[in-house]
Length: 459
Ligand code: FAD
Image (cartoon, rainbow, N blue to C red; front, top):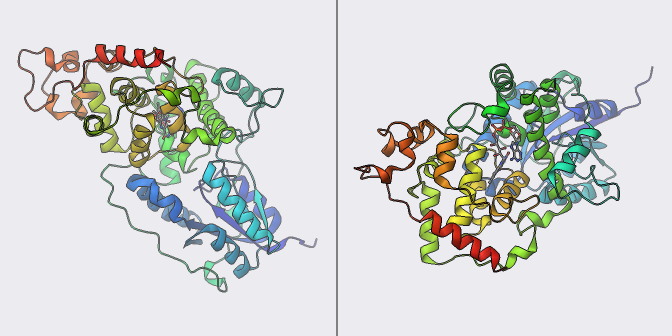
């Protein structure tokens, strides 16, 4: 039987740093006898990524390279120049990617597609980093969903494909040394001196972490997912961010309809929902989803900057808030319940713009991801889709008492309070002798809550 495939294709890795469950491998192998595996270090993405995400990426690439038998070519530059040049250098007729659906990724891919088209090379998009590709799920009249619950029903009904049965051997990888010209290979950069302790990079680490979660925590996930003092969530966000695992792989493992699996499926759906919102409303990454809130009064100036600093440094005097902000610095990750609490505090107790906090998160989070982060912030600020109603203002003390009932989370992250037993740790100002090295609350929550409500009502 004659093999009518092209001689060479390119597999361009971006947010899919894995070899298992890789439909682009099947697509490339169907199209060409062998493929060149490429990663492009793109300064436009790396510069704003922050040390934690850059380092996590630099630690993930050697793992992918090893999985591909040392055949990953890493180059640096603008992909719209580098990828077409590489296609020319290896005589590729097609370049295979998973669709990028963020605002920058879409623009970049259109530019790459155009430059490849000029050379008669096709950009082939297969799948996306989501269970259901953003843009697919709309209401029956074609309008996008703006509310999670009806979206989640349509999402479950739409369904997703089974994991692709691939590994590194699905594709015959070309030795990068064989390429004739084009951009030169660069060394994968060293760690970028992150201040935080990062999760272990690599596909096997992700799969091990997932297997341990399924074994030990999935059944109780629904009951315990709000507890920052317990290791009850999956910590898959960073691996999903970089496509070290695909959400499809996780969904396939969830199995049944128990409370734990159902709740976990809902969270994966939230991730898809926010990506869908960003797909249809790209401006929501930077602007209030609901423009009515453009007129709300926000604080600025020296005193606002000082409050922002206290928040970012974990020195607000509210133990649960401070523990969370220090967890962010310590692990480049924060528990979801605490992300909601600290976001509410910044916006509703300190009256600062959500995007200031969102930018700080994006700088520090190892799982920092535009759709989930910006929309998580807009949800907490009350300016987004499905937003928490404006009158919902998290109480920073009761959030701590409810979700960290023994105070273990606070004691772990705020050493100044480590000697205070039990839930008393959430209100150190009530002690006969409050710790001298821990600040008093920087605001009166009750008064600031009222102030936030007044500002909303004035709209
Ligand atoms: P698990 O509880 O194990 O959840 C499983 C997966 O479901 C997560 O890995 C994540 O992919 C998804 N998920 C869970 N909760 C949400 C949610 N509320 N929205 C969207 N997806 C969700 N998530 C990010 O991945 N990157 C971010 O930059 C980010 N910023 C956020 C900012 C704010 C203000 C808020 C309120 C939430 C943010 N989230 C973000 C969502 C959520 O906090 C994290 O996904 C979660 O804490 C990651 O931990 P985990 O993997 O252990 O979660």
